Length: 316
Image 1 (cartoon, rainbow, N blue to C red):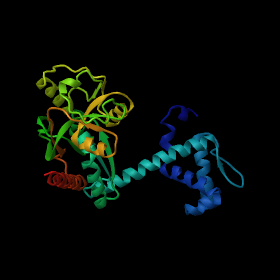
Image 2: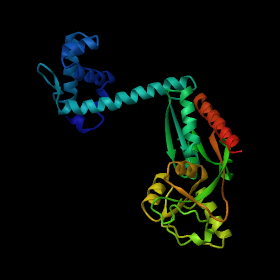
Image 3: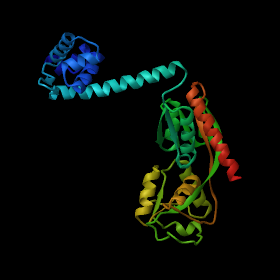
Image 4: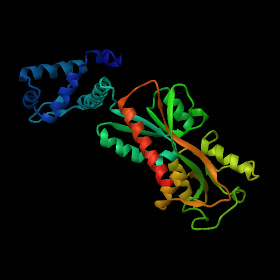
């Protein structure tokens, strides 16, 4: 029992085979059937069970016509599911790594990429790599860039500006984007076709990205050009889901990339408000670590390039 209290000491005698056998035993319901499924003799199965119960210091099954797990057995089952799942996933990733591939791709993106480029890229990517799981992170570009340089992310779809000129990174421009002023169904401006001076909207309840983001910097620059040097937003958020929720819940006004605006307008969740100027967002591109080769990452980047060039061709 002292080993259990020590936390790790008892686990040093635990084997993956123990956990695998526990799951088989619960599913089989009897020692005889479990032994058959594991290609063991019944005496060997009984020995394994006694070993496990000695290790835990308590019964792990209630014996009867159909075995049932005790509280201790349920705790071990939870451990077994977690550990065996990790072992399986890591095994797949090791196998993929040995072939210069990866079984999981970590992608970061700003709003502009989330609208259509990234979904279309992932869809086409899965046609080539159906077994690769893709994890998508939506964060401010500075955060994505830091995580990419630390190799926590494999690919980033983001702003191609001075910050992208990093010695460790390669990049390719995919398309140019603008910043749109938008409202949702909660706004008094919903349904209006009126065009506004940007300066006329300064007293509205604004939902904008935080300082330091590309979109916020472009908005601030446009406000200065319009003779409005200061904006006091009601909400600052880097999450598109929060922006949508606020604009459709109350009388707010916000900004969004043109790519995401088009996507949301088609679905009736946002309306673009016409203003007296064009606010340029800038070039959007794909970035990846140039000093780490992965066939999987390389394929994803090439598909993103093709999707971006296709988008530019149709926009022209």
